[in-house]
Image (cartoon, rainbow, N blue to C red; front, side):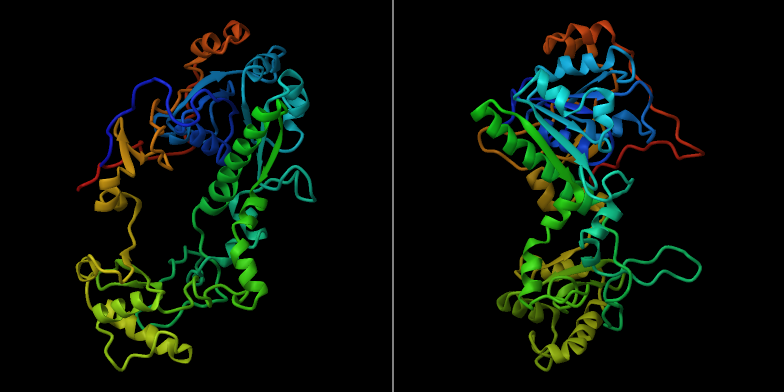
Length: 428
């Protein structure tokens, strides 16, 4: 595994010198601020006096790494002024409230841009700042559903009548395809919150920062998860319009419809991901899997069910580890489907240092990589309020120190819960 500790406290990364104010929230806003911090920005998280409702132990809240924390009560008379003192010295601001809340608290775009005309004010929401659903509560699953993204994800098995969780679909042992009319799978909150939300917010912030530094004029970035998630479908929208994509999941080339771009179970219950699209890669795949000369052709779509069944039968005859050895070093485009912990030990990720361990917590290293100004893990996750005096000094905001609240302890989890566990280090 790559580096094993937090790097030195000095500034570094391509965003060194960029100052960011993050108004505390959950989900995509904190992740966007973490990404900016990973790339060298000086991120100050403005936490609330009350503990987070999530009750997560700060040491495990990886989205708060590479940040410093201050505690400000925005409902107190002095609260908005303390935030505006930080805004006056900031380049970027991130908030994730519902539309209108920041304005009511006295830290909306008008107040902040009046204090700092070059500020880029980033707004992270699910539905955006306007539209019929703008004021409604929501989560990743709903935003991606409306954006047409969730419906693209390969279907799961039908939910059993007793209501127990469905088992994520792979090609069944008999080779039949998953039901394209079944419910879609749930890819955690990666497609909405983080891909359609955080990453688009960061792109918007950096583009607006470039403009602000060229013109001296800041602006507001409205980053809605529904917009970003919809934008992710651009190529598929073109294929749909051109008749090359069906508006159903599980029946297309890249969503499990093709037998050579699918996931298959092995004899031990492990799974193999097959992506043998190009003819030369498919030929290597067919040779190593020993499909036989009488197997249906790759593009004989009428016989795809037969081909899928033959592939499934072959994979069912050996364990995942045995198939890994068969395909090792080849261009057959077959890889094991790993759990998060298993991925920590994969030889390729270990050699690249894709995951690092800091204070016993395994986590992704900063990405992407830069040849001249690499990002680094400079600070562990910030403890709420622990850096108020330091930030007040470094940012020249004495009003912050004058009204500083003490560090906030994490909330107790509701109901019985297992104690927090340090992620296991890799075994290879």
